[in-house]
Image (cartoon, rainbow, N blue to C red; front, top):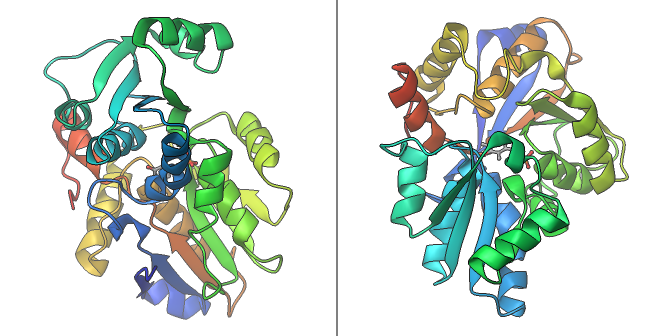
Length: 295
Ligand SMILES: *Cc1c(COP(=O)(O)O)cnc(C)c1O
């Protein structure tokens, strides 16, 4: 698979003698954006092998994973059920509208029930309610998703640092597994709860050549501020690369800040993974009245 890699030039990098590249896995598919494409790949093959015709998964109201799963289910002739955190809000936001239009059955659960999403009894109750299904966990993270995420990097990606945004930790675990020991993988969490996240990542990988940098999550998951919005719009205007406000925008702001603070040694190179997520910008734009790149 040939994936576009683009160098991001900026005076700040010249001064620090650091080079930054961005790997545009967001461009692989118009609707199954970025890392979700890799995370779903082997799950779909497994679902097919098991002869299941329904996918069931979990997500929040802006979830890129919900959008991606709904689209792929429809295109493969599978039914899909989305267990959505929180109450139904009408009209549907763009993410859930997209899922609904792809035929996904949306089932809302309270935030407290949502926490039960890995509990066997809760899953059994869902089977009683919806019939048999192929379960894809929240964010799509499971062993097969990590196997898929191992294909994000290839042997040409020889930069010293690989940077990615982190949600559940599945994607970074795959990236760590396929990085080489001389590289350092840097994860930028988009969600607070860093200790649990690190434990989860350690469940999925035995390698230790990674770091989580927790300083760029801002006020929390999907929380944005004017500085972030301005950064994303300026980045898009200068480099013609749209970033999302939940994951990749925060990562890129983090990278710029770390370069400015001499985190990366002179002469080093960085590869940032553009994991996608632009569909969520539309909902953010509508809900908050800010302007963000949509594609
Ligand atoms: C889902 C998502 C992530 C996080 O992936 P995890 O495997 O859950 O860590 C990062 N970036 C984007 C754009 C995403 O949609």
